[in-house]
Every structure is written in C-alpha cells, then in structure tokens.
Image (cartoon, rainbow, N blue to C red; front, side):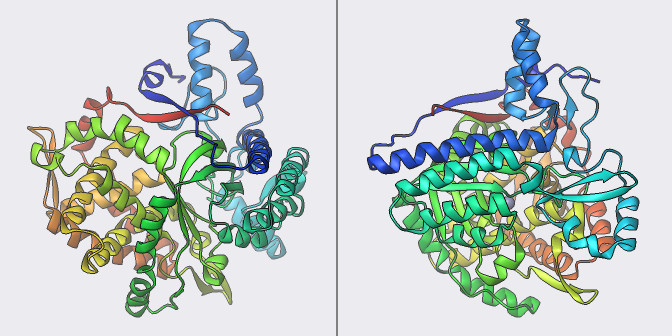
Length: 522
Ligand SMILES: [Zn+2]
C-alpha cells in the first residue's frame, strides 16, 4: 500500500549548509568547484544503481503542481528513491511496487538458492560476483557480472574528468594524488590503490570522499557498494583533540588481540573532524551519517588501516534539532543533564574507532575470506553493534588513561539509550537500529537498563550498563571471529527481536523530529 509522505515530511528538519570558503586560496576554490561537480555526478550514478525509474518519477512529480505531488517530490529528494527507509521501505509513490532487495544491482527475482547454485557450478565467477564493484545481470539463462566502470561508463568518465581538472589546480600533495588515482579507478574499476591513497589525505585543503563505498542498500547479499560523495572543510582544533585519543588506540588493540588471538595493526589511526560543504549520491539521502570509517576493504585494513572522518556539521544538527527532543521525552530528569553534545561526540568517536579493531579475515576453504562474505546480510547489523560495544570498552580505556572524565564516560551511556529510541522510530530493520535492538535486549537482560512503562522513561544504571556493554562487545568479537553464518543467525534471532514495550513507546514518539536534511548552497 502506498503511504502518504506528508506526516513524515513534516518531521524532517531541513537546514541550510553554507560554509565559509575564505580560508581557501583562489586555486583551491577552483579545485573545490570541480570536486563538487564530480560529487553531483555521484547522485546520477547512485540513482541508476538504485532504480532506473527514479529520473522519470522525479520529472513526473515536478510537472504535477498538486500539493500531494510536491510533497512526494520533496520526500523523493530526502529518500533518494520512492521507498520510505524511515517507514519499513514502504512506497510513497503510486505504481512502483515493493523495493527490490537487490535493487538495480541484481536481476529481478534472483534467489539466494539460485545464487549459490550458480557459484557452485561456476566457481570461476566467484570473485567477480562477490565484488562490491560489479552489478549482476541475466544474460539469457546465465548470470553475468558487469563491472561498474562498464555499467556506468558515461557518468563515471565525466566525474573522472572533473577530478582531473581539480587535481591540476592543486599543489603536489596527498589530495592531488588521490584525485588522479580515483579518476583512474572510475575507468579501471580497480579501487584498492586509490582507496589506500585516500587514507593519506588529511582533509587539507579540503576533504574529498568519492566513489562506491557502503553496501547497506544491498539488502539481498550486502555485497554491492553504492556511489556517494562527501566534500568538506577541515576543523583543525577539533581534529587535534581527537587525534590525541587516537594515539591510545593501538595499545587497546594489542590488549584485545591477546584476548582473541589475532595480529594487531599497531598503527595510529588517521582521523579528521570536518564541516560539510556538499554530499552526493548515497550520502545525500535517508539517514545523514555523522561519521564514517573507510575504506571498507578488509585487505586494506590489514595492509594500511583506515581513516575516520567526523562531520561536526551533522553531529551538531542532529543533536540540537532531533536528539534533544527525544532526550527530554525518554530520559529521567536527573539523566537529562548527561545529554550533552560532548558526551555524544565521545561515543560516536569511539564507535568509529572501534570499526577498525578486531580481526578482519579468516581462512575458509583454503582461502582468506572477509567476515562480511561469511556473514552475508547479518554482517552490517553485527558490525554496527560491535562498533558500539567495543567503542564503549575503548571509552573506558580512555577514562583509565585520564583522557575522558568519569562523568563523560557515564554520561555517554544516556546518550546511547536516546540514540536507540531515535533509531527505532525510523526503522527496526536498518543496520544500526537492528544493532540497537541487540544492545537494548542485552542490557535489559543484564538488569542495566529498563523501561519504566508508567512514566515513559528509561531507568539507566550506568555502571552496570558499562559492564554489560563490554561483555556484549566480547560476544560480537566471538561471532565475527567464528564467521559461522548459522550460529550468527541463531544469535541474531535470540537478541535482535523487538521487545513488546518498545512499539507503544515508538508510537508515542511519532510526533518528534525524525531526521535532519541539509540543503547545500553550492
Ligand atoms: Zn558504524
């Protein structure tokens, strides 16, 4: 059934983003303009990956002056497609049908059984089929992998050209090198080299993240990456403070590696705090990310690590325009004082740092396999929840080192409980929200958090919560380390269910702001 998007649109907090570019030189500004042009092309490619009908739907809605059509158009620009990710992926445009699990990256109606059977009979196809950078099509009775560079050759060539023009305006340095190698990757479909060069970019003179990255949209197998782009300016003061934390991560990783028996990376993790200039492709739609850890290629994690980028713009917007309203509703009066931007920032920082921790690959059938391949569609949820829980252990480690105060440590727990509820109002199935279900059920079972039905607020025991979260982090490490799909599935079925007290609460919070959506003035 097609839903009316109006009530949801009214709960989106739109806000303008216009960064001051005066710190850039004239040539840097010219380079930025070319990067923004390339970033905008990522939206075209993304829509092609998502559903080929989107362009036509947009044109049809734009031509229709009725209020309903105009609201649907506004919401199409929030969601990126005609399905409402904040409402169990239900369609809000007539005639589009259900969202295909594999969107436009797999043939219609291909089943997991057919997929497995094909790979059993065609083992030589496995690498291309499991690649994040191919789409799968039907070719007569056969299945066939087509590289992104071939499938989206025309827009990717335009984007490559813009990146090269940008590189010509920049002085020698990591960003210039990355722009050149990423342009080459758009043509060759070989992303590893430029992904590694991206880690060396340090957000100066500005941050450019562009290419196929996340696999969340692939609800069929979680293999295929969607194109996106993020252009931002550095926040040097905040970056410096966070780097001080990062220096203590390797010693934590070493402790963890002894416990679980893997080889620690031992390298400091590069990170940046930035302010948004532009988002394109997947980054521009649905939930706005506040931070990310890239690249996702586990092999690169082993070889070189990863880089973390934090969007101060989006963290502040979400905190003040959405989060505060939730905190006021679901926290007890004495816990509300802990709902501070600083405490949330620390939690998010540690979540992102924790994504890079732990083992990444294991041997299976005589070859090295990443966990995401073994754990399939369960991986995204497990990885997000792992990052939350291992992040808490990391925060405790920082507290022990005196980098974080006891009050900040305890206060961050309250901000996470608020974040659970915020996620569930949007969805129970999205990776982070589903991960939060595991966390909440676990905390509840361990007597650390309970929902006071009468007063509609959560009772939080922060000390018990910290211990329970640490223990759950260890569970996630075990599940990932084993890489056993069936066992992981049993774990998920046990912990990721929606507890009965939550839907009535979520129902009562349906008047609160749901998400922020930036309007970029470039
Ligand atoms: Zn995450």
